[in-house]
Length: 235
View 1: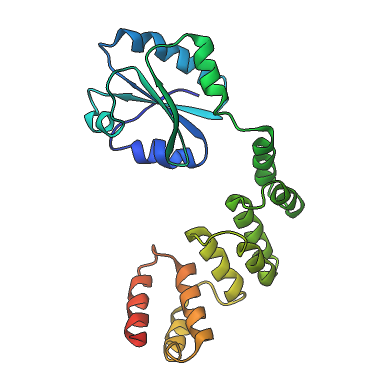
View 2: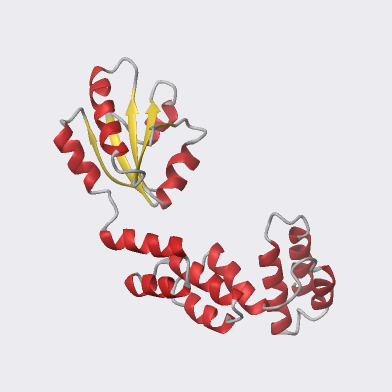
């Protein structure tokens, strides 16, 4: 997998967001830097051999001074490893191939993480339950299994499963689908208008109203207005 040239404009997407799925090595370099030219090919060779399990992002510090400042770089080459949006390791200077290999090896997923990823990719219930047994708090596994249970009409099971982990945007959507069940999915206007008359004094109606908005999502132009109507009705 070829190295990615990252700029200040693409850093969020290509490094921070991507590091939630795979380890990203950030190589801060410059054209005038001799040691950078020595280290760069070594990094590319070793990381390319991981077959996408580690990604290399290259940052030209002259063209992207803001990123250099963000990493508080004092000299280059400077290399940082990121996982889940955070720096987890790093070094400065040009090191020999064996040392760089050790650095990258520590970032590779374990056999268990690989197994869970394979089971997630398969996506069947038996496999997802096996993955859940291996990593009981894995949000990806829980959301995938929750989606499957909801689709199979087992919303109560999905809600019990989701209760195992902290709430997030992803879990809220699955939970909403679990509670709404077989409600119409193409047009909620009539349902929301009817529920709005009851939300102040009816907890169940209020929950259904909120769940429908969750399923519609922020990309639906109606969602913001319906949220305002709910706020006005409640307060």
